[in-house]
Amino acid sequence: MNLAKISANGQITVPVEIRRQLGLKSGDKILFIQNQNGEIVVSNASASAIRKAQTAFIGAAEELGVSGEADIQELVNEVRYGKER
Image 1 (cartoon, rainbow, N blue to C red):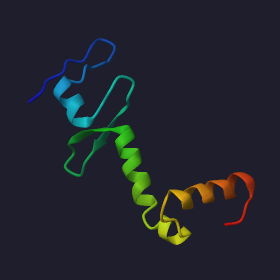
Image 2: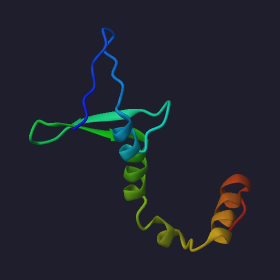
Image 3: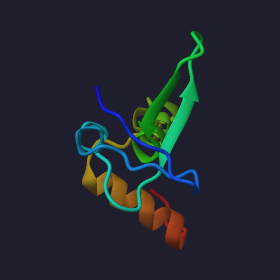
Image 4: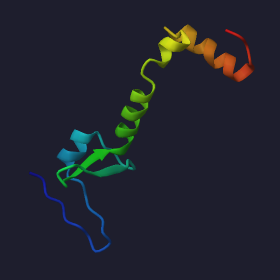
């Protein structure tokens, strides 16, 4: 169990073990989520955003016919310069 004290300004220091487990570093943001049981869960906001984006883009590469770095570069060029694939 890890314990943190709240300062007069409402700030806490996240224990080092928790920072390691969440992959947090200086300047990162943490997300507080209340689950269905009413418990508050703390997570790495950046990691949560990446997971959400990954979920949203599942299947997008296949739909666009992208299967490698060359295809990605071709797609970038198309967007940047209006070149057809």
